[in-house]
View 1 (cartoon, rainbow, N blue to C red):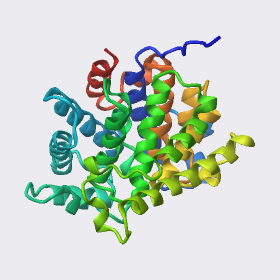
View 2 (view 1 turned 90 degrees about the horizontal axis):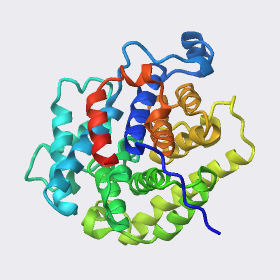
View 3 (view 1 turned 90 degrees about the vertical axis):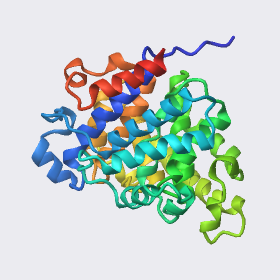
Amino acid sequence: MTTTPTLAKHAATGSLLGLALGDALGFPTEFDDIPSILAKCGPWREMALPRPAIVTDDTQMTLALGRGLRTAMDRGLLGPLRMERAVREEFVDWYLSPDNNRAPGRTCLVACNLLKDESRPWQDASQIGSKGCGANMRVAPVGLVQGLSDEQRSGAAQLQAALTHGHPTALAASDLTAHAVRLLVQGADPGELVGLLRAYAEESRGHYRSRWLGDLWTRSQDPTPEHFIERGWDECLGALDRLRDALRAPSPGTDPCLATGAGWVAEEALTTGLLCFLLFVDEPVTALRRAACTSGDSDSIACLAGAFAGAHHGSDVWPTEWADRIEYQSDLMSLGALWDA
């Protein structure tokens, strides 16, 4: 007898809100070590959402990607050219915005500055050596939007990453992050998530999505496109193995970065964000607080943990007092309602 998964109510809204709440909670603690965070914020299990609840470029770029996807899909079937045009425009608008003052990553700044030149192929703007977490901290919308095939979702996740971060690990980690969000929206058991992601990575390992990425791989030193993308999937598989080991002997009171990495790079942001979520599956606010009290890239780790938790639980799981005062609330709610419909 098979059981039908229980789907969360308003999962897209919950995921976007969770992402932004984690981002705001982790913003003041990024770059701090654990003793400094505890001295500033008190016990981590009691961390309060800052006043005002200001987010970083993580949420700003998530919204830019979400708007780009909405525009592209309003124009027809989602494909690489249609998506690249719309998302590129949104990324450049973000780059030029006076609100882009939240210490954004250098890779995003350099690539978006190059993307301003509309005659430049996007592959020439992509930073082929960068696998920073900026590639996948913003990818959740690809996992939330309705109506995509597996090929479209994988291609879109990798393309949005490659517009700025061209390293194969950035592409693979973004694909995995979007896939994790999608699995949770569809009601996957969190206890099976790591195994499902490993299987997906193994299946995807030798497949270069040329329709979406074009000749990006030629900017690297790899002899073939397959060799290029395999490097990324292999690094992600190694990171997933470390996550699996950490969950065999969970230590909720220990800095998660010690087990799965500090999160400055894409595969570590994915696995450390997942670790925080999976340590506290039934306590999503605690998961955000644990992610924000880390010695690494706290805002990106917490925003990913929030995206996973919200996709699993839905929007009602977040405290109303928090959700009502998060920056960009109306934009988050608008996109969430569109994809929850």
